Amino acid sequence: MENYKREFIQFLERAGVLKFGDFTAKSGRKIPYFINAGMIKTGEDIATLGEFYARAYKEKLGDRKSVLYGPAYKGISLSVSAAVALSKNGLNVPFFFNRKEVKDHGEGGVFVGYVPQAGEEIVIIEDVITAGTAIRESMEILSHLEGTRVAATFIMVDRKEKGQTEKGAMQEIEEQFGFPVYSIVDVYDIIEYLEEDESNRENVERIKNYLAVNGASRAAE
Image (cartoon, rainbow, N blue to C red; front, side, top):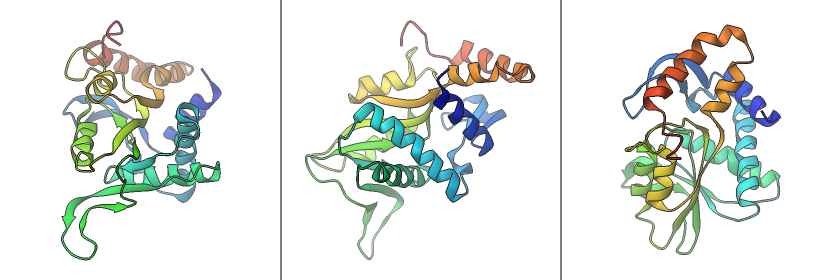
């Protein structure tokens, strides 16, 4: 495993973002581990997370300039931290996020921050994709920005789960909307990391059993 992946998983554990137990995902699935970016609570942690997103962005998109979009609420801090980290690496990109309810006074509207103009590219910054529900919601919101296009989505963890078919949720999103989805790590990286410590055996088995039912077909990926 690459060092940065191990460092990232260790960071997720230390910050309380990665937890093991019994949880319910937005898709309604009962899951044995949970990725919750809402557990990021300090300036140091959000800065560190932003640096990992920025690294992934630079690796995949280089110096290509886009507008970062963070879906409310968790995506707000993610997009801001990624924008700050990118600026420190010489790439100054604008960012914006949505309101849960449209504001009918002041400047009004559903978006806060920079509003993308026709011809500009948008990059969505999310925490995870389970069944793709949240990304489809974001695409519905972003569809009101005429003349723009989503160029990519970056997430922390690819759960490698089925979407609406036997294919992976990330693959379905890519095929449906025509843009790539990049993850810093995936669930198999997490399994590999956990297997380095025998005390994690139960969590490893629970995740593997879950993937045996809900995991995307490896052939379909």
